Amino acid sequence: MVISSEDRETLERLEQELWREETYLDKQRVNELIAPDFFEFGRSGRVWQRQDTLAAEPSPRDAVRPLPEFHIRLLDEHIAQVTYDSAFKYDGVVEYTHRSSIWSRTTSGWILRFHQGTPFQP
Image 1 (spheres, rainbow, N blue to C red):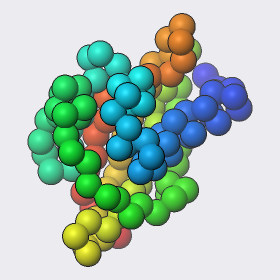
Image 2 (cartoon, one colour):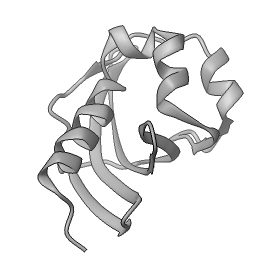
Image 3 (spheres, rainbow, N blue to C red):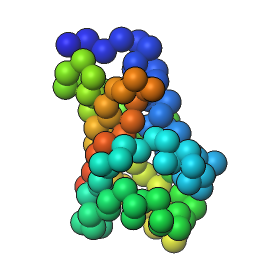
């Protein structure tokens, strides 16, 4: 399956948006972007449910953008997997993480259903 350029641009924009301070500090926008059944395996190993994500007090992230090693593949016509690496400073230390997101196409657009972060050292 080949992803359309429109879907590619949309998914890249949405994934990048989640790393921008104006988005991750905006609970209403995050609520719009994540699915009712969203969950995440955090880089720490913690499992985050949707309500945990919405209730968390986000900390500032000095992330490298555009996101390195950004790739998208369709799993079916309405489900896409996005993978990339992140590098951001947290308390003065750079943390590197392999990231994977599962997005679903709905009648109102793409929503994030699952995310996982796995730490690595370059």
